[in-house]
Length: 331
Image (cartoon, rainbow, N blue to C red):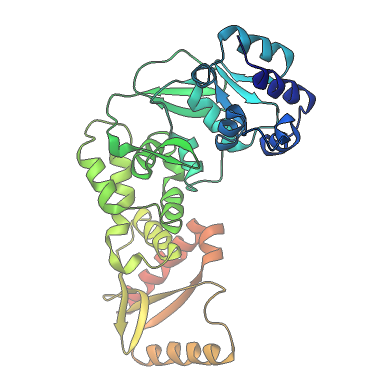
């Protein structure tokens, strides 16, 4: 049997349908300053506006009361056993948390969806990925992954959402979306959620899991200290490797100048440019003098912009292949 505060709360929720949880909490009957905030509203506020049936039961609501309020419109079912409180406008975080809550205790946001939450990708698909330690029934708009290999270190929370930790997220992402793995790694490094030591530790205990070989290969580039400075440099080195070209020395000093990439045998250098660098008249003059001095020392240099690497990577590598071949002939 519900108490009067519960009835007032859900009556207000039905009146203010369509508002966000924060708006609803402020506009509902909870304005009465002599009454503490309703526990359902407080929990929904912390959980992006969604709540599970078992959480409602823990707050003292019977299954019958939950059912009646769902029929009346105070609760809006999102998934089996999960409701939006007093509204239907779900944020992306709310969609993710609702999917996790629907899969029960111990479930975690994972794979592509976890990568989105950590900022490793800007793509959040309509189907949310959730990992559970035991098989779960099929849910609409949820892709459930079962595993028994999770450790406490693989589990954490972000934005109030239970989620796989960044290393495990990268491993799962490598298994399902290898094409975008290099970009996900770059973004993880940029957002400060990439830890090479932690990823290595995970790989060491994950023999036989999908994605291990792909992730191990993809993180090799982060082992070169010279190439941890710039996402552009890492992308360039990957392209060189994938094109089968000789690996250059990186960020080395030749003739008094630091060169981004240098092939000793061919005496050939590549300078990687973005519009953030080499700006202004002084820098312009210095860059021309640098190239002239290197030429006098018998070193040819070409410049490759980040825009070209992004838009035409194959063409860039093919031209680089020809330039290196020309230097070998001349040598």
